[in-house]
Image 1 (cartoon, rainbow, N blue to C red):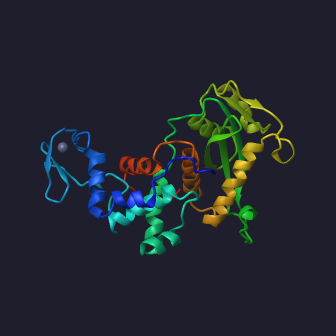
Image 2: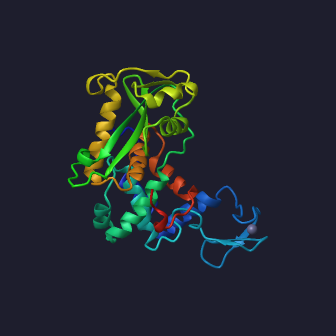
Image 3: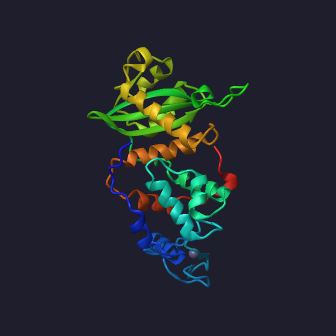
Length: 296
Ligand SMILES: [Zn+2]
């Protein structure tokens, strides 16, 4: 994955954020920079709350902190370190493990792991930009022998459907989802979320795709060829994704969050937008999730 976007350098990051206060002010601006709106009653006017930087609705008296209703809600460690985690996760070309974060930031590994999971949640595709041009879709198995996990039982395999957008000589975007079965229902739901009905979709001859021609009128089924030879880009993308996963994560638990993370970074490697700020905006706009709620 070539890094083509202009990412924020560590130096620039440190200039912008040198204290937890800087982070709070950034969140305040993201949340209320364009005006206050009460989460409880929708009222547009507020006054300062008792706690620093909190706002109180002048109608229903509801008090909101800058982190409430965001993925920074109830973060129990230094907010500056939380921002560092968002920074490292978004700008490291291949991501970063919780062990590395723990070492860099002097936090417990478990703390880094939990917070990183929240960041990964924010990386989930909005589904607002379906593929409109050329698309290819296929399924593959993650885990089991694929990741070198040895065990008597092979219940650590997961089926994943992957869709790519092809542009010129390569892939411009990709999406991936863990599915129960490669049937028309699961494959169709994935395609409806990520591919426009009129896109030129190519799949192999698998029967699960056939009924989808109803909703995707330009769907073509071709033989996949020896070792997927008729889908070289798609198969290379799948191999790269698996290689990345082997490097950062050694089992298929929480696989979906890792797929979100991988696709998020891949899809933005071609964009000029600032990936770090984009991710922070998503963190602020996402509902809070307590760690016990984090699971597939
Ligand atoms: Zn209110």
